[in-house]
Picture 1: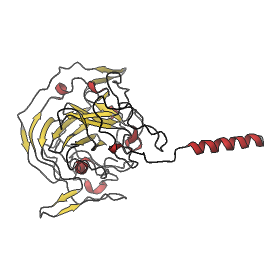
Picture 2: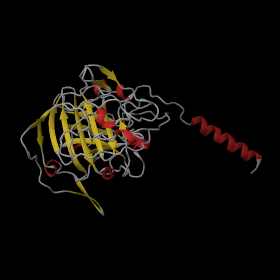
Picture 3: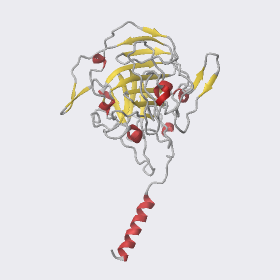
Picture 4: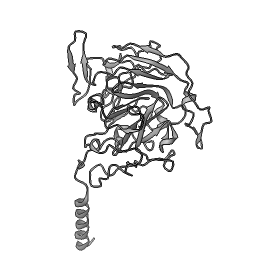
Length: 368
């Protein structure tokens, strides 16, 4: 190669390098954008930054019948009820959650949101809980059916992230549980992985939304961020007390302590989170409340044809507040996770028994 060509190549490389993104933080953090009015006030993309290190928003936020389907890149989700909620999942199979939290897309249980649909029979147990401060969904799932790798202990999605762009970048969450109509939940968190999930959306008009939807304890999972008594095989909708703020614990003597997540490995946790009392729990048949979900076939996705409508299978029940390792039901149907290494941490799903906390507690727990 001639000297002139070498010089030209060097100039070109320098020019490309000079144009590469070097900034990290947006002018306006995701949690400070909006609130957006649903659906008319939502922009096509909430994150319009094009010069930041993590790149551009992967999907879009205006979602309707034209965007619905199993290849949708909708990044607007809804949490409304036991039969109408969404989860963040990868747009395609192949990478661990901790590596792609920023590009997750919405997978929902109803077709009206313009998103992907969680495939039929993926959900193995779901508990919806409405409290004075938040709405929460916790459940058991075959995560491979929403593109999460088998054995992946997963990660945590929230509207903050290290660079304040949120995970996913530009992701919005709405709920009709606070006013009767969909309003944007500014504070929320969603843990996915280890065949379990929890998503909590906090009342944007509540005084402690940021505390109940804490986002910094991303390595100790649902049992501490969203303590619950969800049961595998049970689909129910409950009312309940609000939990203690994540990371805050009051012992039997009335002494309150706070937990600070360490930067290094988590080898133990000094307390067990209190599971709030629940009441008016009504159980349903999954085939009844998830009748619109598609079923996976060797040739693609087809729509199921099960009968629509809710079916109540039991009278309302109540459960007291609990602490300790029991899953809450005493049925033995809740599996005990074996925490494993995550990408940026992790935690173990659900209220799932934490008797195994020591040994591997957590090479990084279940979620990042």
